[in-house]
Structures are given as C-alpha cells and as structure tokens.
Length: 501
Image 1: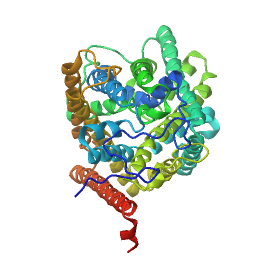
Image 2 (image 1 turned 90 degrees about the vertical axis):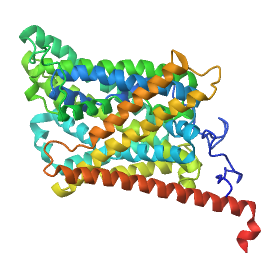
Image 3 (image 1 turned 180 degrees about the vertical axis):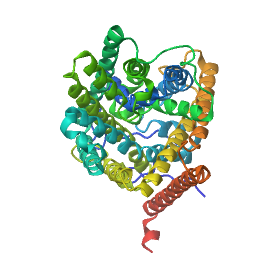
Image 4 (image 1 turned 90 degrees about the horizontal axis):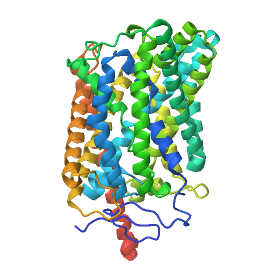
C-alpha cells in the first residue's frame, strides 16, 4: 500500500515526515510571532516553577535540598541541553511532536503528543485548587471557613480556567500578559519567604536544623518515590517549543530562554525550600499551603502581618498564570496533529480573526472542566481521580523517553551550521540523552508504586497499569483512524469520479 499523506489547505498532499509548518508570516492561517525574549524567559519561569512543590519538598525535610540538586543534575540538565539542540534543529510549531516524527516517524510522533496532552489533564485541577486554597489567606478570618467547601474550589477553578481559555483564544499577544504576570507573581512569594526566613533566623534562629544527618537523602522505597516527585517538578522547559512558530527568532531565543529561565527555576526551588524550613519546623509544614504557612507564621512572629494578604494574592495569581501557560502550550499538540490529519482537520484550523488554535483550546478547556469536577467528587470517585493522577505522572514521562531517544538518534543526521549543539559534540550529546532516558525510565517505574496510605496496593497498581495501557490503546486507535481518514480524503481528491461512482 502506498504511503498515506494528508492534504494541505489547497487539497494537495503534504509529507508527514516533514516538520509541521504553516504558510508565510503574512498569511491569514499562520500564527503570529508575538513572543520575544522577555516573554520566553517568563514563560519558562511560570511553567517551570510550582510553589506547591516547594511546600512538598519542605515537608520532607532538609534532605530535599540535596534531592533538588540531584534532580537538576540527572534530569533538568539533560532535558535542557536536549531541548536547546532539538529546538535549534527544528524550530517548528509542535516541539517534541516534530522532533519525534523526524527521529521515528509519524506514529511515534503522534503517540508522543497524545501521551503528553492527556497527562496534563489532571494538572489543571491540581494547580487551580492550590490557587484557591492560598487565596483564602487573603482574608483568613472571614474566608477560612471555605477551606473544606468543595463548591468553592469547583467554582473558583472553573472561572479561572474559563478566563485563561478566553485570553488564549484571543491570542498570545493578550494571553502572554497573564503568563508574564504569573511568572513575576511566582518569584515574588519565594523572595518574600527567603527574606522573612533570613529575618526569622536573625531574631530566633532556624526552625529546622540543617545537619549532615538531616540532609542525607533516604534510600527506602517511599523516599525513592519522593525523588521522582521532585524530578517531575523540574520538567517544563520543553513547553515553549510547542509554540515555535509564535516565537520571534525561535532558533536563537529558545536556547537563551532555557538557560536563563532554568537558572531562575533552580534557585527558586532550592532557596524557597530552605526558606520554608528556616521559618517552620518540618513537622508543621503542610504540602498544600506550606509556603503560605511559612510567610504567615513568620509575619506574625516578626510583626509584618500586612504582607500576608499580598503574598496570598501573588501565589494565587502565579498559579492562574501557570494554568494559562500550560493551556496555551499543550493545545498546540492537537493543533499540529489536526494539520497532519491524525485528528479531525478542525483541530488544525486557526480562528479567522485571532489566528489561534481555538478548537484545540476549547477542547482542552472542556477536558479540564471534567477533571476539575472529578477532583472534588465523593470519596469513591476521588479515589479513582487519585489513580488518574498517578497514571498522569507515568504518561507524562513517556514523551520524555521519546525526546531523549530522538536526541540520541538524530545525532546521526547532519546539522545545519546555525544549529546549537551540545558542548562536546556528538559523544556528549549521546551521553546526555542516555542519562535523561534512564532517569525518565526510573521515574516511571517509581510512579507505579501506590502511596503508603493506599489500603489495596496491588489493586491500585493494576488500575494504574491498566488505565495507562487503555490510554495508549486509545491513542493507537485515534492515530490509525486518522490515517484512514487521510487516505480516504486523498483518494477522493485524486480520483473524484471513482468516489462519485
């Protein structure tokens, strides 16, 4: 059978093995290049930092600082170097979708995009619930009673997701301001907690002891699972590449943005964790409100209560910006899959006025609504939701296996003179890809283990593996259905008489 090729906007075939690209910059069906260097760095910051992981790390104690450094060395550095080279080789819309297609073909490219897109669905309720819980600190005396109100969390999350979707449908030139504001709001509470921790240390001494024993990471299974959580937290520098054709001079700016943004992310995570532990004893840190707890407790101790509502506002705003940024980036995956006709062609159509992938964005919004409601459902459904979150971690790292494998394989292909290579050339690039691949594989294996409080661990593991397999099977079905649809359209275009008969 001849190779199946989808149709372009003029009805002619386009190659599935070429990078996804849309027409020239002045064409109405091409996204606008609206993101400059400042926007790009702030985008990496807002997608790379999640303040809830600072609270999670602080709750685990001083050893988490060492684990942050290890995760940075064994995962973030290989990921950043791979993104820099791959985005320089192929600075097209779709990012890792395009890179995987070049390395392994259409099927792998689609499955890489499919698993990344679906793995992000549980992300929206998680980040928006965190924003809602911290917003209550703005007026804790009168709003604190809402902390256990499921309706509050659902309404807050739905409104926030709706606003983010609307801004991104209008366009990145509007939506990016929420991303940028979220990035600034993300860093400011970290600076506040660091400053107040220094003040508390000066007046009262550290609330948590940093000793050689307390900083030594454990090697038991539960502690190894925690390592995978912090590794998961350091992902995100691959996101902006999904919007490669909406970045000004992407080949030059993406590498610079990854380096600057990565430095900010690493410092915020490590110094923020230290700041929380200096301000609060480890036993008193809440994984949901840890950083806000540190600010609130320290503010009361040093007499700076006025900073509490400001910090709460910033933390909530930062998470709204993060949700909006991921919504924008991840929606580009079904968009490019729609261009390739693996999904219905409507996914690959830009809005006639705002030139945004509005169908993909609205689809992402509707899926987010479903998961927001699941997140605050009854205990039985909530248990199923927790399984979906665990499954999301596994499926989230499958694309990284593709990414690092693509990095390794593409070293055999010649690179253009302006491609930014990994320092040390091909041998170092292959080593980097192997380290990243092994770290991602270990993270997936650790994510299979249920949490310690799970009453039926074997059943939970079977559910996680089974649902992951079902998700992958759905992706395979959608891919081959799309190829069949493309073949039918191509046949009808090339032989309309036969189709009529």
